[in-house]
Length: 45
Image 1 (cartoon, rainbow, N blue to C red):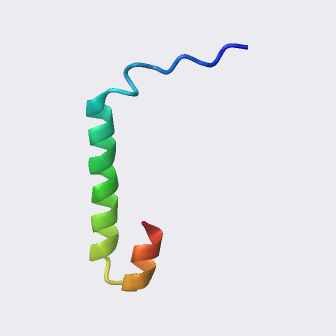
Image 2: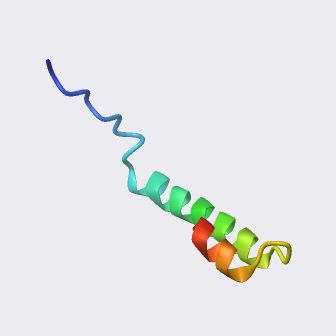
């Protein structure tokens, strides 16, 4: 059985950077949400 060939579009550096930016936005949104205690927000990341 052959291993699946990774999609070259999904492994592009631009997609990785965009995924990192999206992750950072989610983390910052959690950090700004006053209804989530600070330690809980840190555990969600």
